[in-house]
Amino acid sequence: TILSYNHQESTQTGFYTTDKNTDEFRLSMKYNKNLGDTRLKASYKNSTQTTGGIPINTIQQTASLQNDYYLTEDRRVTLRSGLSYRDTQGDFTENTQYNVYENLLWRHRKNLTTNYSFRYDITNFEATSSESRALRFNLRHLLYENLTTSIEADGTSNQYTGGRELAY
Image (cartoon, rainbow, N blue to C red; front, side, top):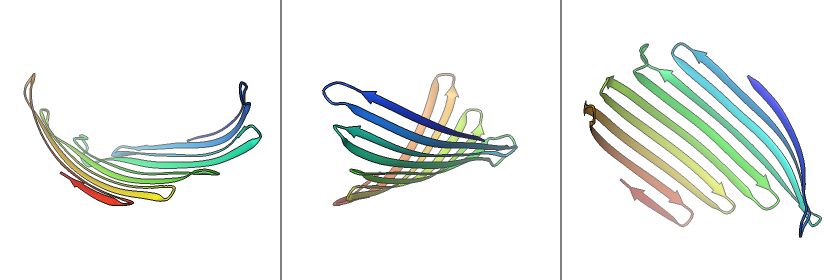
């Protein structure tokens, strides 16, 4: 576990003088077990930038959690799960993002692997929003040392302020 704090002050001179003050806290944790690893990262950043006597305040928060779970002891089948959050609020900006993903990697043999993945994202930026979902499948086979066959299939659905699109 690592917990850190950073304070920065800077001044830029020129046509306009800009002062910037930033305080940031960070947390990083990792937990290892025989059949998996879990990682947690989080941060909080508060900054003020003053240009020409006008201050602009911004607060940014992030968090992510990732877990790798080995479904077999030989680690041939791995499930990777993730969750993330990012939020930026300021005098002139509002932005929030969420993300969830699942990925299953299966090494059937030394020369044959399949990969299955799912991803879901939500983004809110100012007065607009978007939501997307994606599914993907990949099969990879190595017949000889330089002859590889790959098959891929994927599909996405994007819904946003003012529209929607599907692709596959």
